[in-house]
Every structure is written in C-alpha cells, then in structure tokens.
Image 1 (cartoon, rainbow, N blue to C red):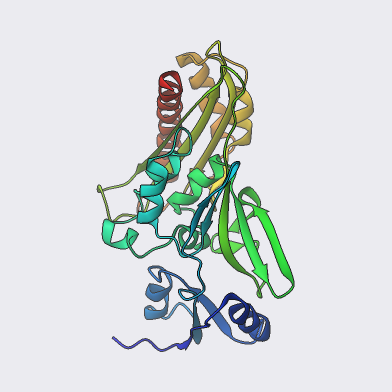
Image 2 (cartoon, rainbow, N blue to C red):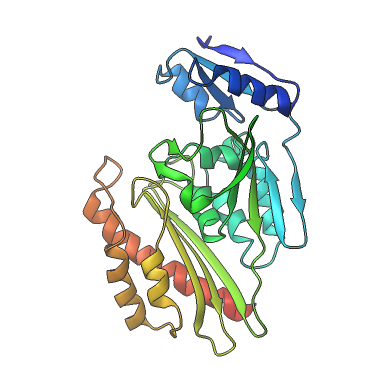
Length: 296
C-alpha cells in the first residue's frame, strides 16, 4: 500500500534540526524512528498531509553507560534496550522488563524506546518504568538542548512538553545509589487479554529502596492507562516511605492510590475494573519489588 506523505532523510542531526526549525508551524513534519505507531496513523488518515522526518541516519542508535547515568539514543530499539538492561543490577533491570512487554518481538525489533515514550499515549509501557527510574528526556532544536524530567514530559494523550521545532535525541537514566545497607528492587506488571500483541488494559511499575532494617526508604510508583497519560503516584509513594510493608499497609496504600488515578471506560476495560485491578496490581508489584530487594 502506498502511503500519501512526504519524506525527508537528513544526513546529520544539524540538518534535521534545521528542517524542524524551518517547518515549525508550517507543515505537519513528523519524526520517524521505528514507525510502528506513525505509519499506522498515516495509513488510517489520522495525520493531515504529513511529511515524515527519518532520523535513522543521525547516529542516534547508541547506549552509553557512564559512572552515574545511562544515555539511550533515540534510535535504540526496544529489543536492544530489553537485552541491555537485563544484564544490569536492580533496579535498572526494571527497564528490560517493560521494554520486553511492548507488542511482539517483531515490533520490538523495529520500534524504539524513545518512540514508545513519544507516542504520548497512556498505554506507553516503557514510559511507566522510566518514570520509576526518574529518567530525563533530551530535547534538541537549533536553539539548544534541554533535559526534561519525564514526569513533566506528558501533558495528556499524545501531548508532550515539546516545542514544534524540538526533537527527542536521547533518554538519560540516572543510576540509583543506595546508602550503606540499602537495597533496591523493582517490578512491572501489565494487564491485557493476551500474552503479546495487545495494548495495555493497565500497567504499574515499582522501584523500592529498603534500608538495612527492611523498611521502605524510598518508593517510586508509576502507572499507565489509569490516567490520561502515564503518571507517578506521588501520594502513594509518600504513604509507603518510612514504613514496614504489611498487608494492612498495602490495603491502606490502595486507598491512597484510588485518590490519585483517573481511569476511564473503554472497550478494553471499565473504569471500575481498572480502578480495582490497578490497586491489586500495585500491591503485587510492591511485594515483588520488596522480595527482589531482599535478595539483592
């Protein structure tokens, strides 16, 4: 099937940024990385007179590990991210789990980690764990570069904190550091109707830091499809901090979580189902995160 769209293939990042600057507000210039979301939208006529800007030739297919952070270029596929983070210690391996749950292996071999985030969809699974890991999104334009905290990146469904002349070039993930005796653990769970090839009914990610006594020193919780965009559960995190995990505590944490989420009805699941299931999944991922921290 022939797609009705224009095409630009810049040879370097400077040329890509120039094209974005020149066409800002003039025509529908859309970033093309893996294309697994964009091409479907073009085919369905959901993009008006689009011109795709192919960034595959800009040298953005890198993963660079530094002393205190990891930089993931915008062309790194989900399969590559899954493999890379699987070999890292807790809680960084958390990113491998969510990256490996997006679509099927054929999709993950083409789709990119940055592209999953930049869909701006509440069902962007990889974004949930990046929220737990407190990642930053590098946005560049001819005006310069800025690092956007991921919890400020999502403004609503398909709405991002990007200017029209900006493009995402990398994701920056800090390496969590625990004090002496501290241990990390993380977990991610996604609910859907099949094992693969489905959009999430909901998803929840968790990062826990336990102190030497086994109490929660720090909690990071995030969820997808339980709000108009992927979100952090800040109040639930605060409630868990400084406490020992018990079933009663998690029951109360579930009530706190209910006050933070705003699920909606859809043909994949009702609002009431998503709310109840989301709380139960949160309890499971917190327990599993604590178990992994205990084994660390």
